[in-house]
Image 1 (tube, rainbow, N blue to C red):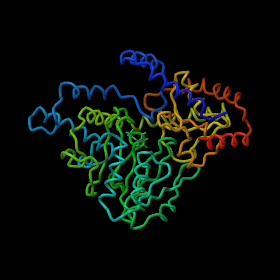
Image 2 (image 1 turned 120 degrees about the vertical axis):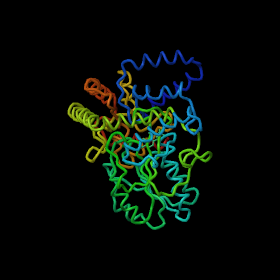
Image 3 (image 1 turned 180 degrees about the vertical axis):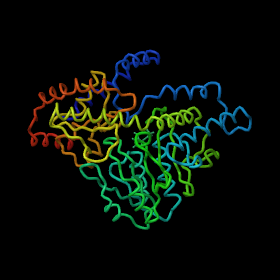
Amino acid sequence: MSPFSLLDLLCANDSKNSKKNTINSEVLLEKLKEMQKDCIYLDNNATTKVDPEVVEAMLPYLSEYYGNPSSMHSFGGQVGKAVKQARENVAAILGAETSEIVFNSGGTEGDNAAIRAATQAQPSKRHIITTQVEHPAVLNVCKQLQKQGYKVTYLSVNSQGELDLAELEAALTHETALVSVMYANNETGVIFPIEEIGKRAKEYGALFHVDGVQAVGKIPVNMKNSTVDMLSISGHKIHAPKGIGALYVRRGVRFRPLVIGGGQERGRRAGTENVPGIIALGKACELELLHLESASKKQKSLRDRLESTIIEKVGQCEINGGATERLPNTTNIGFKYIEGEAILLLLNQHGICASSGSACSSGSLEPSHILRAMGVPYTTLHGSIRFSLSRYNTDADIDEVLTVLPAIIGRLRELSPFKNDDAAWLKDQEQALAQH
Ligand code: PLP
């Protein structure tokens, strides 16, 4: 039995269908509406629902107020004022100054821009430190820099997804241009000790970039008196639309733009501003800050109830990273002897959206590099799934998961030829990985 069979089938069918059918957009929208009606959305680390207040705030800038904020006339100038207000809201959620906010297209661009800026600003330093559990938006830039002659250290994590600060200290030298780490992990929610890391980077004169995409809006983030030089954020993780984000760049940090052209964003990111997106991000940050305390308390309580009931009712499962500090909205649960994709497909039949480390779109069905770096045993590695909550989730959502999930796991375990047989499971997984 291949661990990839179910999702392989799904992906193959999808691509076959998309070639055969040319679905018009209205039909597609109707289908989506139907699917969404009773959907329980627990995949908020992938993307979030745009808050209706955010939609309301941005709509006038898609229709009536289309002026260019850089124009000299008042039609554009009024739009410029709205952009200024949005910048204040983004600065407020980060405890930053408005001049330190650079709008861009999202987390990937922010990560790319920060790493490139750090290397270009210090061309004689040819060493970068990052971790094995970063998002590809960081890892793939580092890999490319390696090809260009940079030395990159990928710090390891332990079984809870935690870094060893002694390993960081041993890796740092005066040749280190940049330390780039994530604030919180997208798959497990594990939070890194950012200031402890930054303090050590500063001792060696290295710049410090933090991928804050999963942390902002979920836990308090404050750049005042912080060691962080640059921090990336993404709109679509905090109830704003896709394609908008920002990079915090501490005042005084030498910065070289990734996107070159006009002088927008004080010469740090060229291109006419995505005004509706910026207004949306500003509104989203205002709302996130407003709801932060109550929302994280509520999500933590829902998440904890989900975890404890699953452990009690299902058994033979592990919370990956569960023994360390985590985001309040995230849980990553490894179920022994079964495949995560099978669980996801069956949850999907009940209208429940969750996720696993491997993704159809990436073309790779290898287990998550994050869980592998944590050394999650093969018996649970393939059966690990993530639930990530938002402020829209309710007690009823969790009740529904708790009603259907134990039966799904029970059914899959019944079908599993490996139940309670770690050795056979291990052998099968190794063979499948070798073939892949
Ligand atoms: N960094 C992390 C930790 C993420 O989770 C993501 C998205 O999943 C990104 C970066 C990329 O952000 P975006 O989708 O805005 O490009």
